[in-house]
Image (cartoon, rainbow, N blue to C red; front, side, top):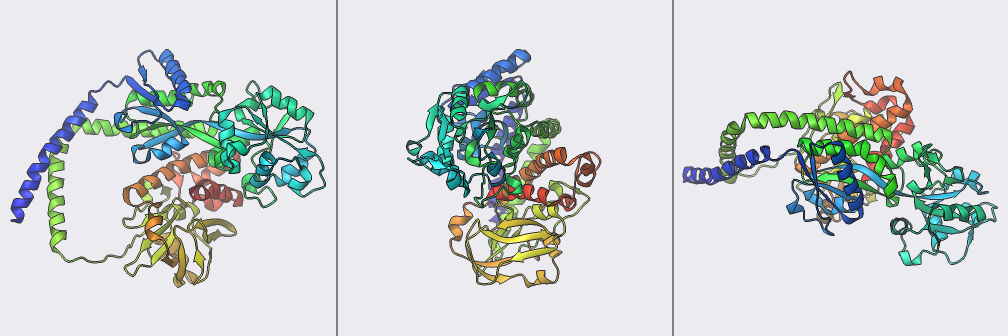
Length: 560
């Protein structure tokens, strides 16, 4: 009976394998010189300009700019390149297999270079709640009341007459657009006149409005107003990005700027771009296409970011070229291998159905080599991963074991101390769960779940090395009694989605290093890179607390 079932299943599977091969051959013979570009409405103009500019410079390629619907029909655009923003990239969910930021719309708070409070602002910044009070209050506030100082000058709010500026500011101050009481200004010249007459004013406008692109610097009459993002009354290291345009653009890239105040423009597709035309078009956008952005009110990418994305695109192209050659060469073999694999899979499933269930604990040992890449990483099955690099696993008794992920320990290196909570403490998802320390340098790790700590890994008190050697098993941190497990696991990742996210984190790590090395100096390149540009294991060990704080902001805080 079992043999009959197995044979029938294999016969049923054969037409699907044949269809797969036919589809692959069809894709291979498709027109590789044509690009279909679909954009959401707010980016349709820039998408059209990019398409025109690329076609003018590359006569061999044909670019079809398709209608930009209000709602993208993803099922009709599997082979298209999409130009979308943050919200669309999120809403697209499983339809997005690949994306790369190619520009941004950024709004900024600016003040007069003659503002009497400019010295205090450079030390303290202004908190989001204080900014909200300026832009929603019916009465003018003083800088003294905002900064806790004797300053008596009034702080009036001004806002550029721009739908995007109003929308993003409204999200940042967490207030309806109708409650914004700021004076509206038509453009840069009106803002400059307003701040000249009212040196205590604060204005919000697009970043592109205040840049002198001929000299690549801010206009001398104004300054970027520092934002005290955590509201602690001082500008911490990770908040000091406002004194220089290049530093500010870098800070936006790595996530130091409030995320409500900018919107990425993504080139996205249902799968990794593999055809020659699409790859060439994206590469052109990263270089020549950047020149078109400011005229449309969009900010260009920072030079280090452009370099890192160009390298990532070249790496992707190498992978695709190699993969395409192999697929073309082995189409017949794939058909046979697929059938054999399916037979083995069905046999395994039948075996699982008849054998008794056995509980297997999640034992995963980390792999350490001199070079760090995704081949070193463990991708556990059955564990839930959080975007702040913690993990959770529910045991048979209903309690949840938590810890830090394998990626994190590969980057930090040997942990010298873990500052933990006490048994019985309650934690909420997103709260600081424990703090890793390496000779005084620290990273704060957030909880993937809400619940009560019922157990602590006592083995860590005598041997912290297990956090590096077995982060998913012996190196666990707490046992937690969860409060809302089913709901919170929907926000976590498991299996292939988790593995795909970790692989993307490795790519982001290269971006992070490109920016870090550009500011730290060439002498640091030998401690983070092997010959050939490969990343070394434990790359943060030789950097100071500033780099650790920057990593905290870019990789851990951003995932909360």
